[in-house]
Length: 122
Image 1 (tube, rainbow, N blue to C red):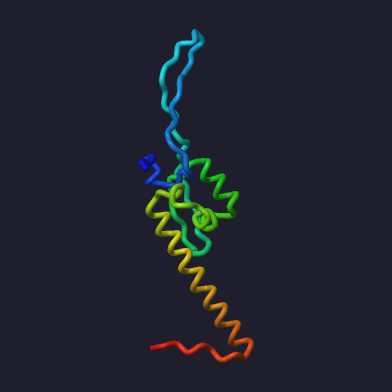
Image 2: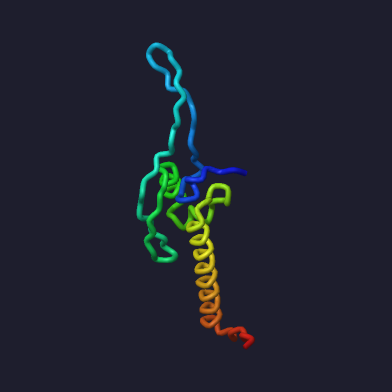
């Protein structure tokens, strides 16, 4: 499907350009474009412990806040909403780091419980 190309350069939260009529006092209708409210913001990835600058709509900022942060927003967003390649790569890095931390915690728990550690094939 054809998407809003500008959304491929930031976190737009599914927002696209809207179209409508501007209606004057005399009821003359003129076509107009309604653009998304885009801001440039620094957002923190808590998992990666990195700050990133994004072009982000105010709608996406509210969604990030509601999700509990940038990491949770990126993880819950589907590919139709997340068109920005940098954000998709960041989501994959977050998944990798979380998987590594989970495996490390599991290994640490096994050591504490006194179970033998699993043998790693060389």
